[in-house]
Structures are given as C-alpha cells and as structure tokens.
Image 1 (cartoon, rainbow, N blue to C red):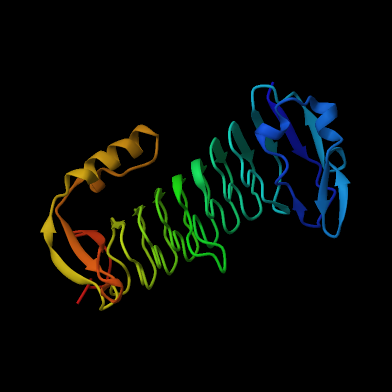
Image 2 (cartoon, rainbow, N blue to C red):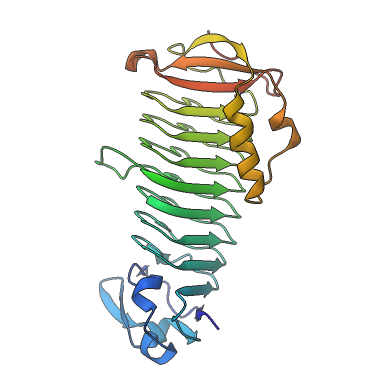
Length: 281
C-alpha cells in the first residue's frame, strides 16, 4: 500500500508540506512518517497530529486525502516518484518540481507548477492564479515539464514561461501567457484579456475566439493548417486529456507578437471558433 496521509481536519492554520515529497519518504514506514515535523503557522507539529498515516513509501508513491486547503507547497521541489491528491489542496502544488508525477483530483489554489523544471502535473479540477508562472520578482516561470488542467484557471497562467507545455480545458483568466519567453500553451475554453501581452517567443493556441480583441501589438499573418498542432493534440489525447474533435479542425489564424518585444511569438486562433469578439487588428 502506498504511503497514505488522511487529513484529520484538526487544524485551520497554514501547513507547510514541502518536506513530504516521495524521495524524502522513500525509506519511511507509517510510524516514522508520522513523527516528522512540519511548520504550522508560527510553530511546528508532528505529521501524526495532522494526518492519519498508513502504508509505506518504499515505492515512492504517496497519497493525500481530505480537504487540504490549508496545506501548502505539497510536492514543491520534488525530484521523483508520484503524488496523488484526493481533495482540494492549497497553493504551490508542484511548484519548482524537477521530476516525478503529481495528480490532483480536486481544485488547486494558486501558483501550482510555478517555476517547475520537469515532471508532470495533472489537475482534474480548477486551478488558481499563477499556474506554471514566475513567482513575484523572478525572471522566468516554468522551464520544463507538462501541466494539464481539466477545469478553469485563474489569471497569469504561464507568466514568463520559458519552456514546457500547458493545456487548459476550461476557461483561462486574464494574462494567459503574459511575458512568455518560449513554450506552448493550449487553451480550449474562453480566454480573458491581455492574452500574450509582452510575449517574446512561444505559441499560444486558442480553440475559441477571445471575448475581447487581442492586443493591437499582434499582427495577423495569415491562415494555415500547422502540422505540429495535430502532433501535439494527438499526444494530449494519448495522455487521456479531453481534446474535443473540433480542435483537430482547421484552418487556424496566425497572429505574430508581441510587436513591442520584436514579434517572434505567435497566437493561433481556430478560424470560425466561437466567441463574440473579433480578433486582432
């Protein structure tokens, strides 16, 4: 049985759980894991005071169950193994992760996957602000890895993203791909304002037309059917991501920008996609 932590619901203070990564728990059984100390508010507490712990971590599989809204930094910086979260979870899930796999079956707070450098993060609920983004004051966000979100996401997803792949099945908030340096973002639902603002390179794919115009610093560059899109979409479907059939249809309108950053990025919008607003200039 994987090492399983069941939230007791006895604490409303924020709990910093960055130490509960699979590689740190690999040599521990339930009793040893329960004796670990975690920061709680401005003090500390034993894991066993917060969670019922069963199983062992020898196979680097860890499961968390319950309402973990107060638990922060779960999987932050993890290097290997897997984490399964059954329930809502607090901020910084999988932030700065280097490798391994995280799957969350509930809603996730802000900064999930922020500045991640590898591995995969799958969220079957919604995600808050700063998905795969740069932390405040940092120069670059997500550098490698894969983030899949089946629900909606908050503002600034992919902020200053340098490499990697983000796919969002629901709606995306304002600032999607803002200051993007490189990488790929797929948004299958509606997107907010300032999509791609200040992007330097990279690709943003919008299945639906935005509710508001793209910024005037994006120039229409024609309509075509890019071959690479089919490869990406096929891979997403292979991973079990809910890619709609309409995503494979074309053609796609291409917009180059942001022209204030030399215009080497691109936004692709499916021609004829739904949405009230005209796109581009």
